[in-house]
Length: 247
Image 1 (tube, rainbow, N blue to C red):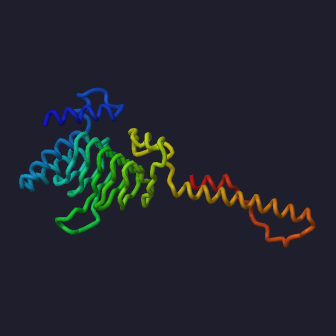
Image 2 (cartoon, rainbow, N blue to C red):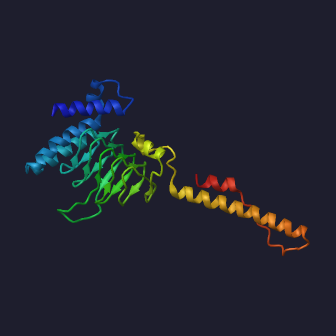
Image 3 (cartoon, rainbow, N blue to C red):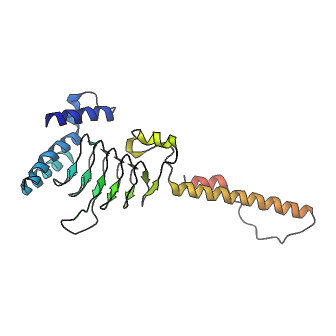
């Protein structure tokens, strides 16, 4: 048990630049306290001491503001950063080296007892602050969930999920693959633009190009002596302003 705690402390010092020394981590990090107490609660749960497991979990919630059901399976070197408001359900599974920020819910959408209702996080997953991961599916290895995303379907390994409902950004080249292996605080990654935002920018740019081409065609026709019917005057399309609306 003590070797696991030492491993957790070393992991926190690596992941959090605000952690100055081991004593500060041991005494001042509720995420560490919640993980240690969850191990006790999980031991009670597996040994058919259900009430004791729930009570230990309840005390941990009262002390840390982090609620982890004693039935949840938590891997090694899991770091719950800040942690206040984190909720992890009964059938949730969290792999090794995962990072979970404050306000995260690993929740279930089914009322069927005895079934898998909560998500599984593979190794190295990062869940940003306020994200809600809801349902019995897997968030793949090395995947990232951006802050305040609402994820209700599987996330492939190495991908990033952003938005509500979450949309999936897949890595598409070697540079993105290298970036995916890097630690990203709060699930924020370089060039991690929302794909819907990218699509809207593309449509706006295309509309601006078409308007410019139409103006050139009308000017050429007028020079050739062909007078086109004048349409009602409309406000000129402002490409820059439209792009600002979807940034």
